[in-house]
Structure formats: C-alpha cells, structure tokens
Image (cartoon, rainbow, N blue to C red):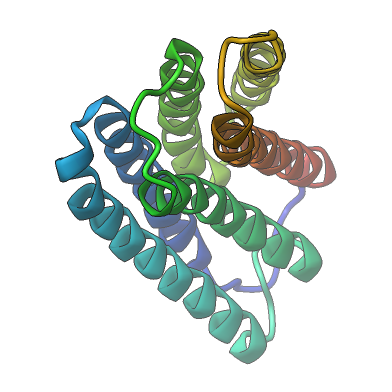
Length: 207
C-alpha cells in the first residue's frame, strides 16, 4: 500500500460496515418472509422496509461526509459508487418483499427460497469483507466468492424462468407476479456483484 502523508477521514469505513450488516438483516428478513404464511408477510415486509430506510440514512451520511471531507481514504468517485451499490442491494431486496405482499402470491416456487439463500450467503461474506477495506488486506477471496455466488444465483434464476414458462405449471397472472419477484431477487444478486467489483477496483488502485 502507498505511503500516506496526509491525514484522511476514516469515518467512511464504519458506515460501509454498517450498511453491509444491514444487508445481512435484510436478507434474513427476506428469508423469513418467503417461508412465512400469507398473514405474516406484511409485518416482515414492514421490518425490511425499516431496514431499507436505515440503509438509506447510511448512504446519505456517506454522501454528506463526502461533501465535507477534504481528503478521503480513497477516490471520491469510488466512495460514492460503493455506497450507492450497497444501497441498491437493499432496494432490490425490499422491492421483492413489497411485490410479494402487494400481489398476494400465496404459493412460491422452491427456487425463490434458493435465490434468497444465495443472497443470505452473499450478504454474510460482504459483511465480513467491509471491515477489511481499512487495511485492504484479504479482500481477493471476497470478490472471488461473490462472483461464484452470483453465478449460482444466475443458474437458479434460469431454472426458475424455465419452471415459470412450462406450459400449464402456472396461470398467466401468477407468471407475471412471480416473474417480477424473481427479477428483483436476481437484481439483488447482480448488485452484490457490483459491490464486489467496486471493492476490487478500490483494492487494485490502492495496492
């Protein structure tokens, strides 16, 4: 790592860590929601919405700090992109939960549970990695694992689409409802990979 001669604002690191920890909370709530009875889903979705609001607040804190900090720990654009990508993950998970409640989708394909399981594992490795941004040590295993998990998510997604579009498996209305849910969950997996790519870019620049 390059020698630093100028003091730099270090407050960004705990904010990134807190955002990633909220993604773990969000993924756990989503897992409970897809396994829950219809009557329990609205409350779990409300809890996920609250986590999404908390994640928004962290993003705003990062941006406020960015606007008032003269010397940042790494590139300003990278800080903005990382904060935005973390927030986008939560937005996608919350969107899936909201659709499930609004559309009253009673029976979910098993593959949706598999999608959420991948998201939970990806959230866990992301939360473990964020504190290491401070030292930039041991991050390569993180982005390699996230890339692997995103590939797994893609496979689950493709199998789900094949199931949805199998003639007679679901009504046309249910296909439309479920397609929106699984698309939101796939978006969350993609956003996790975007976070990992951003971390990789930062680490390579700082090496």
